[in-house]
Amino acid sequence: MIAETVCSAVAAAGLGIAVVTAYRKRYLTATRIAAYALVPLGLVMAGVVEWLADTAFSPVAWAGFGVLGLSWLMFATTRTVERRRGGTRKERKAAAREAPAPAATSPGASAPALGQTSTGGRSPAPRQKPAAQGDDDFSDIEAILKKHGI
Image (cartoon, rainbow, N blue to C red; front, side, top):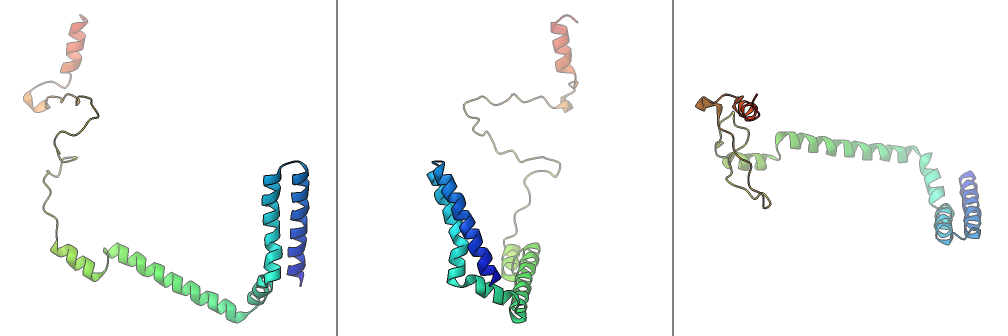
């Protein structure tokens, strides 16, 4: 009884705000406010509020929510375990049969060389000489200093 009265009062207040908003010539906003204000009244008239009030005080309903929560918890746990294991047993066996080939790069390499890729019309960056050829790490700096006479 109290829930229906509160919902009706909320609907009346919302419709009053919608009228004031329409008076200010903001019709789209007033229509939206009126739509929100009519939701609680519609829920009361449909009997949803009474059903919720009866459900909230029913121990059987709370036990049902507990069973639903337990079911969801079990489902989520099994999905988590399945993902950590790498899928179902059939999926793991199939993955073991189709084991990937050994890596084509050495363990110290950062990424495999895939050849020249598209650079969007730009020329690729020049490669530096490896340090194993006896060149100094500071050879480019020395060249710049010599160029400026330093």
